[in-house]
Length: 179
Image (cartoon, rainbow, N blue to C red):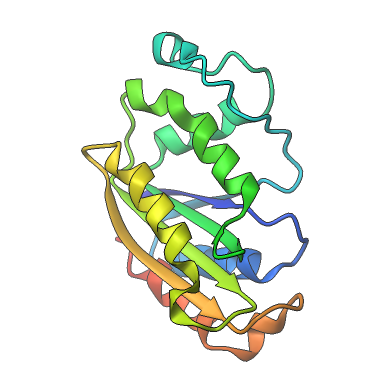
């Protein structure tokens, strides 16, 4: 059994990337894993100040929700980022959370596998290339971590529109494959 944390970076309740996260979680739970979805929608996360105090302290000096989320990432075996794609890139809230998780670099993190789930109105398969590159860059900073996979579902814009695509099935199967 693996401990999986899914960071849902959409601010839209019931958004398509949230539905991807929930499908992935259902598959991972069916496979016997412990899964937690953390939604950034109701969290207060300030921008990183670039002070690097977190490297000495093991946590950020800013008092908001980012430290609690970073602790969950640190203790997970698997990290999953789920984001809508805005202008060919991850959402701003996801990027802000990645920046604020900088304290992980100097900590004994457990995660080995990192996944990216994303969706966008544009259905060009290259639409998520910027987000994938950003996640790969984050993973590259952790020598024991691996960018284990990604799933992009294009051609979805309205809330729940993803239900008409096979992306939820693919997300479920991706989650279920984790053992």
